[in-house]
Length: 336
Length: 249
Image 1 (cartoon, rainbow over the protein chains, first blue to last red):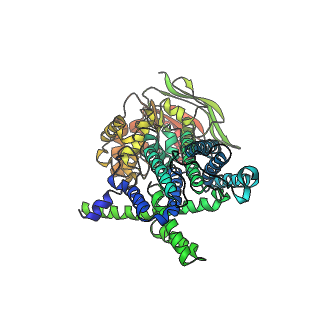
Image 2: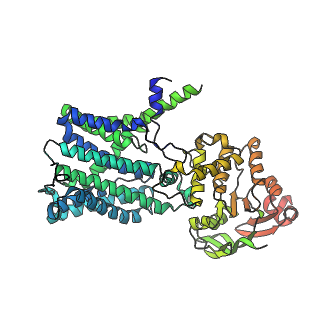
């Protein structure tokens, strides 16, 4: 077996199920090793790096419901934004202790996810899509009007976070922010991975594949979708809180439709329902955005669009889908 | 024989159109019963009412002596009602063993577990593999369903339903669309179903019906035309009229 084939065989998509090997493969540590290398080797990129890590966590939360649960949404920023604002308001008016902020953000986003999920998950398809858009639009307007609490269109400023563990201040170079974001990304990845490989995760795959049959085998489809939606909202809320803590500012953008759309694009680029699509997608998207914006300040989004068109036309499983296709080809060749 | 499944005056209307008209039906424990009727007779509507996919307009459904008319689909399954579908309703991109394991896991209340690892549910996997082995699908267990021949996919349909260990099994045209070379395997599987399962087969293939069923109910225009043994059905003038038309009788 060639080195390439060996490498590809270790990159099987993370689909879960009853015969899937749930053990963590050595290659799965690669993103975290790369993240540490970047921390050491490229300190000038840490502010951008921590933003990418936060969006990876946010994309993971989306992948859990879209890729594994089959819940179509364009309004996941509602939970990200609620996490960001609740962490910001808490830090400004109550306590600036970061871990308390993360817990409060997770609870606020989770409760909102539970309530909204219980309503909208009775629908499917375009109706569901429109409802997710409506929810994030309502949140946006509420945040815009609640000037005293959110700062309205000017954003919520004046947040000063306490040092992490009382020791590590959020400095302007992004050292603490980067490691803080990385730790919670790894925790979020571990939780999502556990869910994917659990019996609950297997049943989510069943619901995504065929909800009619899941009803026919007695699965409480609606209840399971509400549960996963709530968990996803909590993770998105934590991602939002991380953004607040690391930037010490909350703008209306965190609830905007644009970010929702960008997040879906990132996940499609990386590969939906593959776990690591949520790691690869934001990395490629945001690095490309950074580089292209320097080269083509006015047209950078054109190139992002072109990349998306190429991916959708030629690699429908995203960048990791290309890896899957190559692996399948190698395995077929070995079988001959 | 005490019925395990019974309907009393079951009706279903869509506006002015009545698709199920006062259906009284009962299925005894371990029965081998067929439900036949021409296209549009209301067979699939009847099955969908039994399984809870659509609510009846009036009447009641009893399963194991309990009224399940208002019960959800999952409650009916928990009480022992399993079904297959006329058109394959499978988890197409999952492996064959996962298709069955999902069903076994739901029956054993493992399916909602958030904290365990699915592949460590050895009992679920072992039971699924045994079931696949008994249906001659052991070699295909790790294959993705979408890549299987159609006949084997029909067997997976049955395997998923059997994974629920149902007391009552509704087989909706189990051999529909299967080439004759493969259909004999499906007939063997149906013939070998455990005798404690009451089976209701909905089928157009009269050869299969007469070989399998001990009793047959004929539906026409949403109502029960008659019920009897295969011999009675075969010779009944009304049944021949419904299937062949007035001129041919």
